[in-house]
Length: 146
Image 1 (cartoon, one colour):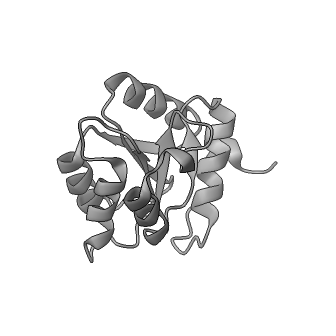
Image 2 (image 1 turned 120 degrees about the vertical axis):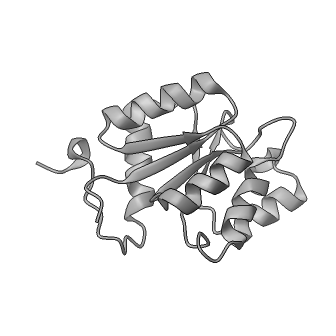
């Protein structure tokens, strides 16, 4: 059993991966990062992260929903939790038909806005991890009630 939840951050922007990795580590999470579909799929299988934070829009593609679908269609990784990262306050209107349907079918856990403060990000990640927490993971030290 892991001592800390492992979060896989999937984003095509190196600066963002570094910033979010630092934010989540400071909040007590273990992190790994992937810059594209191949890395995301490989690390998902190898590491079996407790949560995948996936950028929705990664031009020229594939999109985050495409990558999440690939991960969710694999029997080994189909139960991994996925939340989408976005620069948009409300990303639903920006998702077109297929992407919106796929997001719902995947059981997408939530959206996390890339500009949120560390405390907000850590709280949202912990909320997602607490949903059906069958792995018995301990919350990171920062989020443990006194």
